[in-house]
Length: 213
Image (cartoon, rainbow, N blue to C red; front, top):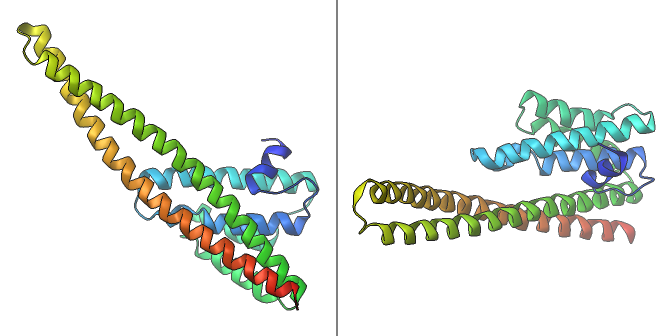
């Protein structure tokens, strides 16, 4: 992963400070943690891939800056590596927030970091939504074609006709099952996207209030 790719993964611009990298990593590790998706294996697998990219991006940026991982970021990563259910990441974020958020400027920094991370996470979820909707359309179209072929060939006699009907029927069943599964995942991602949007707006409001202090 290049530095530019790492910055993109964490939603940062060139020249981001060490504190900005640590804050972005900490917030994204919480928001995109696999445990957010419960027992949904497909979404958890996607989230685990995303977490690996977030970890790699953090390592690239910290190595490039010649800096060691901050305590809050290290807590978030080690918690995920141990399968701690995100508790370490949330605890690290809370302790970091309580220790640093003692002035309006620090409160604003933390709130802006959370708002930015929420938007970065939301965009990642929206990208997944787009991919799944496209796949659902493709699978639905395939199942429709298979159903049409099955109906057309159902009157055919002989081994070939029976074989075509058998294959087409299996494709129809598989397509229906996959469409139902994808629909459930899409619903979960839609709810997660809405939740991240609320988190972004709430954090942005806190940052605005802190800026006026």
